[in-house]
Image (tube, rainbow, N blue to C red; front, side, top):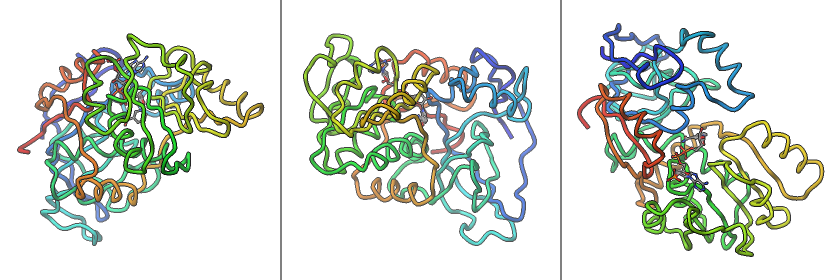
Length: 331
Ligand SMILES: NC(=O)c1ccc[n+]([C@@H]2O[C@H](COP(=O)([O-])OP(=O)(O)OC[C@H]3O[C@@H](n4cnc5c(N)ncnc54)[C@H](OP(=O)(O)O)[C@@H]3O)[C@@H](O)[C@H]2O)c1
């Protein structure tokens, strides 16, 4: 089968198309023909191995110290069709259309992948894909959808509360805007000029162009801040938080970790640095919202598998609206 092999840490040119052996499912696994995968900002950080401090060293030990060894195919999200099942598999049948994540095994930049029917911790998760979605739309949902849902639920967000989403036009942001509106909150989305129209079309009540306006001086306060960017002064944004409000950072450096400890000890405001646990029931929740027409995927560009390196380059420009997808087969 064709796969994009991750040959080195660093530039996208280390992602190379190669012919590798097609995997065979174990008794508890399904073999999926992948129709679509995705490229997120997180995938680019992983490729470069430029991760938050607490992740970069363990990830290097895990993936390979000097170059990728244990993990040789990147890609964490997929949508595709079950083409073979192991003898113990009962949940899926050949022909089922599925979507989900691969967890720490990665491996979705390929034509086929074997995944466990019932994944363990960090093995990702799988479910039947929304019946009304294309493979390309479906593959963009899981990881960003999980994060957005996790932040909103952890903050115990209530209808009528106010949510500020910093980086609202990207992968996590576009799902966070829609989910926050679904939960009845009032949403302000912050991003650059080209992304504001999209954010508004997804339901945001207000949009702010961070390249033109300093929203930290607006005098507004929020019950929840979802910040997928983490740049600039987090402390200034924390001042926008109401007492007992939550501030979630999707990407955190050492200074953010120290700040969150200080806030834990000294303040009623909560600065949280955490990730979702990618539960199957959450994937089914997102699928249901998609089928009910309450959630959609914004797919900016699709690239064929062969051009995965090009897709990584585009994501790194920061220009993408919502999501970038890799098409591995007929969609
Ligand atoms: N996607 C996932 O599933 C996932 C899961 C876990 C963790 N994360 C982490 O979360 C972070 C963000 O992920 P993402 O996939 O949502 O990224 P993304 O798709 O690149 O979105 C980030 C958005 O933030 C905007 N932005 C940049 N600087 C800004 C600023 N100063 N103020 C407001 N907006 C700004 C960007 O637009 P402009 O460049 O045009 O300004 C872009 O629209 C990554 O570091 C990733 O590692 C992602």
